[in-house]
Image (cartoon, rainbow over all chains, first blue to last red; front, side, top):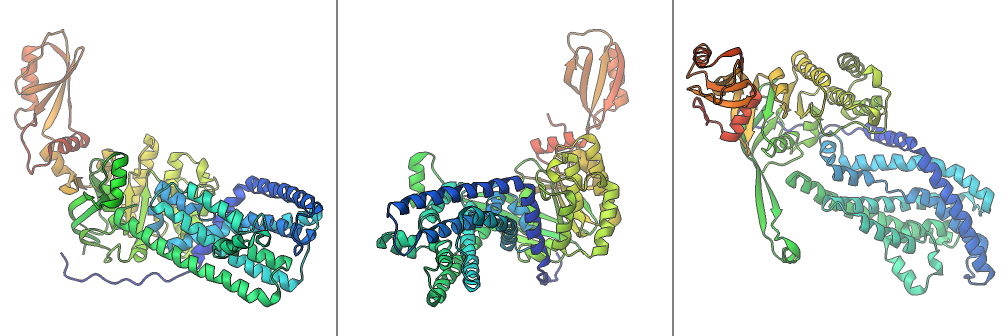
Length: 276
Length: 335
């Protein structure tokens, strides 16, 4: 045995380049499945049109609340559907797949920050879908005539959308991390999807809910994903409440990021001690 | 100075003990019974830079666990490990920059993208200088004949092509050490040979240290002078192939074609291994009787038309050791 103590090597310098490449490769990969993407856009357009008919019919029978006029709720629903094109992507599915087929081991054998790799890959996938939303948006404008707010409101909406995206990202990340312990995460994911549908305000605006359900929605993270940016878009959340609304979203981002970090560490520790 | 040094390496996996059935499932919620499984018991070895070593053992012997510890993704329970001066699990990223890995059963390439894109990505990950990258790509494309399918999506490649891609991918950043885990599994003879050729070339020309785990002992025979045999988590042999063959290859087989049919074949000092029609295989110990004497003994008793001798192959030797254990300087006839 040599007497010399182990050298303490410098951790390789952080470079952004690999992570940009991960995102680019994810976009290229999605592009090979572009037919999938086109069909999902088509299905959104169909849903937009059907939901519009539902709301028109409901409003004709005076079933609707007064603070959301018909054109506002149609705008709300249409924008929600378009957001769904991005938000409904399980962008960290790759983590689950890596754990399922064991390739997580080779991920760890590379000089990369593994969770950041999953983040970059997911972001690339999402960006590709964002590129498809723009043409869909134009089409949506053609078939349903949605309201277009002022530029400043659109800017706040985009910030809120980004925060909502991060909430969704960390939520998905945590769910996919469950695969460190059990590979059967579908049921849990399904439950979370339903909760998001109901309490996120993607399908029905939360302001229509009874007060009790609104309170429940308020203590859950899902409203930060859809409801907040949408209510900013349609003007229910007024400029003097912007900071508060964005603040709550940011709080959820921080809380979920913290949980995600803890869950990831516990999972990664399991890999290095138990071999996955 | 050794590039890899493992001293009394040990890895114990701990899992929850659980009685079968629903009762056991419920009981396991309340009790904390654990069961320890020793995957690697006591492994020590030391490798010099540029060595090419076959790391051999039956399924479950602890090969993969050792490799995982060497790559830094598994923390040893006890023992000392140093790879290129680094304790792998303590400095996973720094260690990862020094190593390359090929798994025969698992590709590291991007499934949906052309092969070329995976190389581009690896260049970015390992921060390979552009000119070095081009130089390596040119070199690998030449020996591995990659040019034909560089633009093909990986999922459309044949296994042989994919493996060649995986090898280039593992070597692109000039790793000091490569770990090859069953790199020729499932390949046809031609592809196997191409891969072996590549491993040999890289080891010889670039001085890359190679640890090769495989079940195909032809890989080892062709490539490495040294083998480490591991069984039940312990190193049972570490040394040259020749010595192993010398010590264990004491048994040869005499194949005899009989001219007439005999009800029974009995030749002293031999054992009838098989008999099919007129073809008889007799196993004998070359330290007990010479081939010449044995042939004479056979011809005295039976009419034969042909004889030949089969030398023991490394496969048979290793199988014998798995079954009977290794004992230093073994000469006796296992019966």
